[in-house]
Image (cartoon, rainbow, N blue to C red; front, side, top):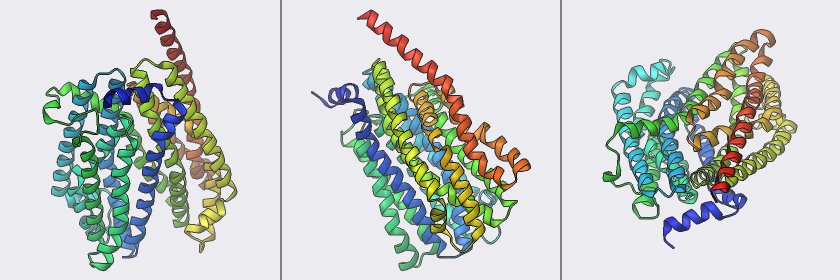
Length: 456
């Protein structure tokens, strides 16, 4: 049995629960390593002073834009590949993979060149003050140099996950994240390179991750091949890849917009409010990253089996993902609700107002945690099976057309509590928006399963 047949058999015959768990554990580890790296990077740079720390926050917005491009192409190509492999269209899957890969490199080069040329106005546009601007420019230029590798790494990572090779994907991302954690203090403090050292550490780590992930493809360990001759010569193919990745692009982009809106609304109530909301967001994202990682393990299972017309297994996978993630969020929501004051004090204990606001916001967010798994699984599913319009609609709800009006309106009626309530209420509303789409999806799966039984 060759590689592609063995992989097809595994993805369409192995028990769904065991298969999802085997794919989800590596992706969860990757998400956790990334979260830890982001925290460590901020910690080391903050030792250089307030302006340097502020520069990291400014450049994080730039990295968010670069990552959005990576998710756009990576998730677009990856979701399409998983369906094609389920349909046993390996040649077309290789065309999509090669097209997505070279598309990502080209887009990365364009972003890098434009960013470096317009670096000064760019950091100002992102919100840098006169004191932060020199640090932000120094940090941003190295991040821009590495943009093709960052976008390329994300694309390769998502395509490996789409093939069901989550362990290979984990190795590349995790190794780069761990390397970054070690290089940060070495470059900043030992080599006395300051904030440039942190940026160079990040850039080198992205290049190493890119190299490891690319090796997985060129060494013959994958079904899809990245030969340049496999890349499509038609614009339509690249438009299709981008359209399938649009939900991830909106999800990532709207997260940045939501954070800006949250900070501006909280700022009206003082620095303590801004600090408290930032801490709650960081803690919440650490927990939620597990659900995202679990979902990334679920997606190739859904895509493969949808392409293979194993609609019964698609439904099993959906229910297993939703139930397991809901249990996890209920458990950690209860722990977070009970331990909210202690969790906030881990970050800051000197400001009672931060602890008070943070505790209230944390408990509200924990109460809404059980609503998140269905919404997450729902928009991931529609993206994976190629229904990008529905997926984009659902992906834009939580931090887009539901959250933004709430965070702008509620503070007028409830003050700071309105800011605290905005995200939990948006999570609950997004849950109910997903219910009719889920019911309709299950009806569609049932109908298609009946048609297959008639054919048999």
